[in-house]
Image 1 (cartoon, rainbow, N blue to C red):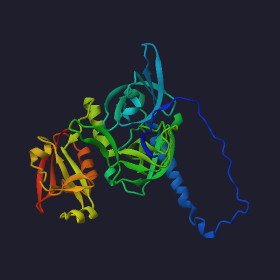
Image 2: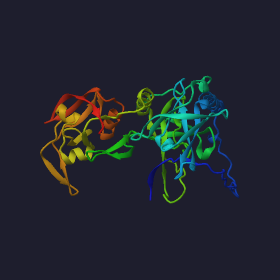
Image 3: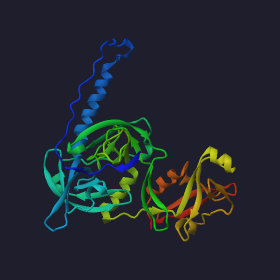
Amino acid sequence: MLIWIFAPSEQATPEQSTNLKPTLSADPTPVAASSVNPNPSNDLSDEQARIDLYKRVGPAVVSIDTEVAGESSQEVTQEALGSGFLVDDQGHIATNNHVIEGATRIFVTFSDGRQVPATLRGADQDNDIAVIKVEAEEVSSIAPMVFGNSREVQVGQDTIAIGNPFGLQNTMTLGIVSAVEGRSLPGRTLANGGQFRISRIIQTDAAINPGNSGGPLLNSNGEVIGINTAIRVSDPTAAPAFAGVGYAVPANTVKIIVEDLIKTGKHDSAYLGVSMLTISAQLAEELKLPVNQGALVTNVVVDGPADQAGIRLGTNSIQVEGAELIIDSDIVTAFNGERIRSSDDLIAHINDSRVGDKVNLTIIRDDQEQTVEVILGARP
């Protein structure tokens, strides 16, 4: 069985190793001439670029240790390991909420071996993001990380993860973006019965293991395109280990949350107040919809932002696999002029917005295109 789990904080334990010996072929096959890189200088150039990138951004990645109180006031029951990265020159460090959740004491270890105490500035459980702070003088010689634009991330581009897997400090691993579209992680159930989802999660095959949580996922320019938060495992009963599928919360979402946490210590997620269904070409043909891409509204929360703006739920329904599906509701096809191809697209735009933002939704209603202005509210 395959399950999604958060890349957990690693319990501080001695390093374990497995002695593996290479297997040699009894009849080795000569390497074909065509497999030899005719321009090895390109490989050397790429290698040097990675070395330079690590030297430049590596010092901004930190190891995070936390202590959690036990049942008695003097007992410490857990010392955990996670990762984080410096986001400004004031000592603010971004990480995952699950790395520091419940901690009574937090310590940060820099790449030069210095360990200093940190305080919690704020946390957002929904998106699994937290900000901790050390004194500004502790980071005076370290350049903070720079956020890239996660909307520009494309499948196939290089990814670099730097973190502390299994407590092995400042480890760098390489991979590619494996997928972006259609990837999301489940969050809490909302008061109205819906479920929050972190949308447009970046999937990568760069090795992410326990202890990497909260570390940055970078592009080849060294810009943060995501924060590593989850891995996929094939055996939920075994110790978590990387299986070639890792996930990162996209940088555009992280940046907004981090800015709010630094400023006020909290983050209110933007909220539209609808449930949606992704329209595919097949679904559009079966339901005779006027478009073959977009987000079909399947529920509108009474008195929510969408309801107040006039987003309409239809009245005609059909039975699909035993469930009732309303087929003549509004279809959202663009958000502030940017095309919406799926419900995940719309969720991602909302996640990247702020409470109170006025946004223009392009919708299809009664086979006619129109624009509706919505003022986003705060998620209940």
